[in-house]
Image (cartoon, rainbow, N blue to C red; front, top):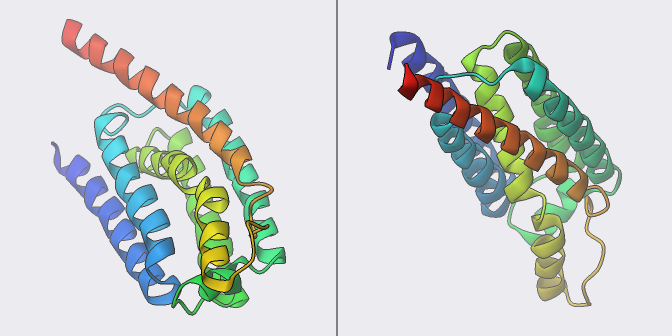
Length: 198
């Protein structure tokens, strides 16, 4: 690893740990496990084993990345309109209000996505980190809107399986996230084969 590699890894780790701690203090353990541990933690591991040393070609990566980010923004709009933050607070011991949710997810995330798009276009390694975080996050996090949140609400508050904010748009960015993951894996394998031949 070069000094530059180590620097990028440290930056990604600081972002991940900092945001995970923020989630734990505001949204409680459940969102922390889903977003902080699964998405960020697994995203870093995926990044290290795929595009860390060989950033993915921007011409291949930007289309699924930008579409996924747009679909994720639509998903967040649905969550905000139907009070995802307070609903999460209702099934955890978190303190997410609609405003706290908007600042955490609706403001912080888009800044990271915009930076990620720029970094991908520049073939900067941090673009690989952001893309891996988003794609892995979609794969691991979005099904929770259908499989965990509504079931937990039914168990805690009674009633049957019912709508939970974000359910309608949860699976769309998951599909494009899988597209992005397949591109990263394919290109990483090509880079490793070329490296071994050389």
